[in-house]
Amino acid sequence: MEARYQGLEAQEFFHVPVLSREVVTGLAVRPGGHYLDATVGGGGHSRLILEAAADVQITALDQDEDALAAAQKYLAEYGERVQFILTNFAAYHFASNTFDGILADLGVSSYHLDQPERGFSFRQTANLDMRMDRRQSLTAADVINTWDEAQLADIFFKYGEERLSRRIARRIVERRPFQTTVELAEAIASSVPPKYRYGRIHPATRVFQALRIVVNDELNSLETFLDKAPNALVPGGKIAIISFHSLEDRPVKHGLRNSPLLKVLTKKPITALEEEIQRNPRSRSAKLRIAQRVL
Ligand SMILES: C[S@@+](CC[C@H](N)C(=O)[O-])C[C@H]1O[C@@H](n2cnc3c(N)ncnc32)[C@H](O)[C@@H]1O
Image (tube, rainbow, N blue to C red; front, side, top):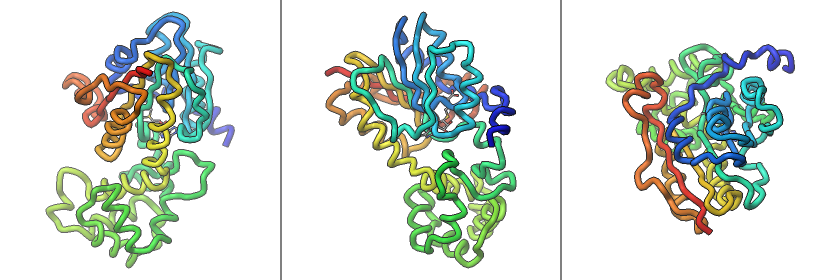
């Protein structure tokens, strides 16, 4: 394993940071400030925060070893100003009154999607994995090949907002076991009506989203983060969260609004300008919400 991480080029991981100007402005990065990047990924946002003012310090988290290794390399020039921690942000110990700003840029990085062997993409053959943290044991293959039909239908509906969840779950149970992403995607495509099969998005998109959320327990981690993070801000400190679909944006919106410590600064979420969407299509679905600790 180790050799593989060492061989990983930072550029390979490089993740074009979305809404970067909006994040840096929104956090109002101040000289000598200490910031938490809860999802450092390739280090794109962290670098911009480090560059935004003098003597900024960052604590950088990621639950993916590859991401952390790449960020370490990409941010090496900042030396001890950046501290890297391999952890799920839900398991991080948030010390109170510590950070001038906190950023979470949720979900998987483009690197994850571009590395077929991680199993996040249905466009290239790979084992059904989808773990961001490969120290955990549950994989997408475990879910697909062992959960019962009703459980599968339930997660496809709940976490994929998939209308044809039952029909797809039935076909999967008939045809399993599945080894690879492409086999699964083909079985899903063959179980839906042609109109759906040739629609705007690939018919496996929603099921893959659901599997990713379940395998990484993403929504529970997000709830824990929303609960614990505000208290780690200094009074006046700001928290910025970028989400990519409504299942994430909804808890973010409510979590920020319902925290007794926070005042929401973005009545409506900030979204990418057309120019950014042209440059980086992934930014199309990004929503940024910002709040400030008031107590
Ligand atoms: C969208 S990318 C972040 C990209 C980063 N902002 C950049 O500019 O390069 C999301 C990253 O968060 C990590 N991640 C997702 N959920 C996490 C969690 N619960 N705890 C820690 N890291 C997480 C993923 O492994 C991924 O590297």
